[in-house]
Image (cartoon, rainbow, N blue to C red; front, side):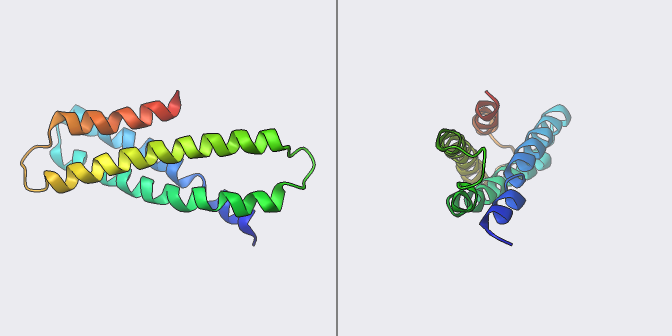
Length: 127
């Protein structure tokens, strides 16, 4: 197994995590469930953490594939730009979610602005 395999094995985890977190957050809002809101925020924290090894295995994976046919420098640069954007969005959502979980761990209800702030990050990833 080489770095390209590792990168490809990991790279779907943040995507699936973000999708799962959004679905959980939607369900939490529909059911008005504070517990599900907290679980969904936890999923966003976990997704942000999973995005780190995905991003940092990209450079070693590039060294494996850059000499393959049909792999061009502009294509790699475009992929790197998209990866950095995705890392920043996942990281931003994770930081906001973690801050909300820590700051309001004893609160009966999470403030709506925390949920709204976390919600805004995944929606930017899709644009």
